[in-house]
Image (cartoon, rainbow, N blue to C red; front, side, top):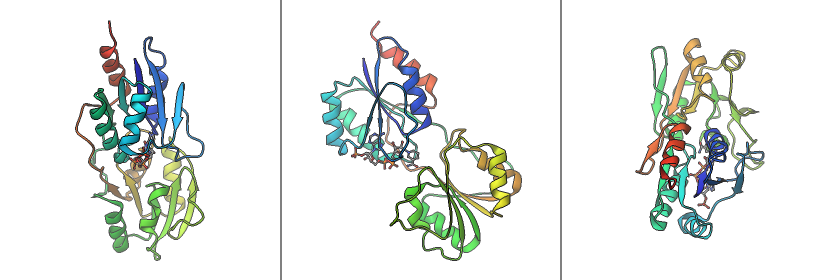
Amino acid sequence: MRVLILGGTGEAAALAARVATIPGIEAIASLAGRTREPSMPLGNVRIGGFGGVSGLVTYLRQMQIDILIDATHPFANQISFNAAAAAHEVGIPRLMLIRPPWEKIEGDRWMEVDSNTTAAAVLENQAKRVFLTVGRQELAVFAHLKDIWFLMRMIDPPGEDALVPPGVILCDRGPFALDNEKEILIQHNIDTIVSKNSGGDATYAKIIAARELGVQVVMVNRPAIPAGEKVPDIDSVVAWLREKLPS
Ligand code: NAP
């Protein structure tokens, strides 16, 4: 049984490693190619876009893929909608691995918004020193906020021509520890964090740090994802795959 795992997340890499150990399954992991040095899953990896739905359909047919696992990031919804359409067209099962979002708990000072654009509008009125953790591709939305100082954390630096808000760029990759996140907030006198509601453990420490230090979080809610079967963790994907294996 040949399985294509759409990746770009820590879970996808871990899933690819797990699936590689299941007899009877051959897994191919797929990355968009956004980061310079991706944490590569074990086994077969292909890198780069497919060329929309039609490109993915062609790939699924050429490679004789039997099952599609969408383990992409909750905010990467274009590829998820493409995967849904392509799997439907080819007539193969598709499963989404989607980690649960973070839930607001007592002590959290969250302002929930539906887009980075709305996050930028919120900042304009009430922030002076912001820890911006939404990623390299989203910086331009905040670039007009010249009266705010930003600490911008991302895996790779932005391109030379990128529109970047005033402040400092910090290139780093999770998982991040609570002590590290607290030190960042204190050292840079941060009053507001902007974060996607990514869910998972790897980047949750900044949310705990904000809670403990009373820092406001502008939390960007997730975009819509396609209908279809969803599971929250790797074990559930493995169990689902084992059920699909011919006995
Ligand atoms: P996106 O908007 O959903 O996808 C844009 C295009 O990138 C897709 O149409 C597809 O190109 C290509 N693509 C995306 N994921 C791919 C994959 N796993 N394999 C092959 N092609 C892929 O995605 P995005 O938000 O730019 O994110 C890109 C990648 O980074 C994703 O794989 C995601 O898991 C990872 N990531 C995203 C975020 C985030 O916040 N968005 C955070 C962490 C990691 P074609 O149409 O040419 O096939």
